[in-house]
Amino acid sequence: MIRSFGVSEALAILSGIQSTVVLSLIAFIGGGLVGLAVALMRTSDLAPLRRAAGLYIDFFQGTPLLMQLFLVFYGLPVFGLRVNAWVAVTIGLTLHASAFLGEIWRGGIQAVPKGQTEAAIALGLGYTHRMIHVVVPQGARLCMAPTVGFLVQLIKGTSLAAIIGFVELSRSAQIIASTTYKPLLAYGLAAIIYFILCFPLSRLSASFERRFAVKT
Image 1: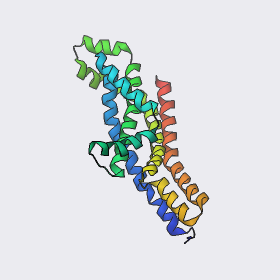
Image 2 (image 1 turned 90 degrees about the vertical axis):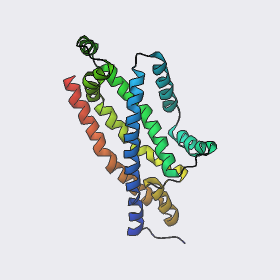
Image 3 (image 1 turned 120 degrees about the vertical axis):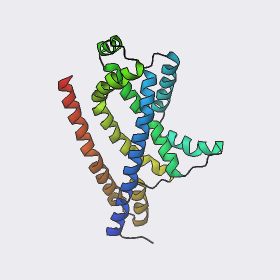
Image 4 (image 1 turned 90 degrees about the horizontal axis):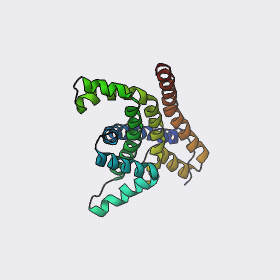
């Protein structure tokens, strides 16, 4: 039975916002924690750690996000780990985000003038204190704009989760489009919502870029 596109259908699409936002935040926070470790490994003095982090980044940056979600969703059951779509999507997006954030933050760490590190060494600071008190705070400021910019890409990337059955904003629009035969209205509303979510972040990223470009 074909349904008309009314208020209840619009609300059904809007209900997907919560899953999109929550999934984006979880992937961003989880990816940030793993990404920081990846960035520190990438800038480590130990060659094996640098190579391992490099391979990790190359794999996740060199393969489509959709393939990564498939690998997690269908790959984990092969090892006896059956997970639902929520867990699979969270793991897949976290791994994906960690590779990109790790590389962004690696660039920030290496952009800190070497004189800062040499001064910290001259003061007797070890690696851990040097990174916590000198290098990472300065590198973090340089990474603000690309980090927020990547968050925008991550929010849009959550739309791929619909492929493995996760119901978020895109999947909600797809369901409504298939029952009302009004794809333009359904996907148009979803696109507007994505824009409302992402546009302020894009402007914030541009603001950070202008602000720190003047000071650096």
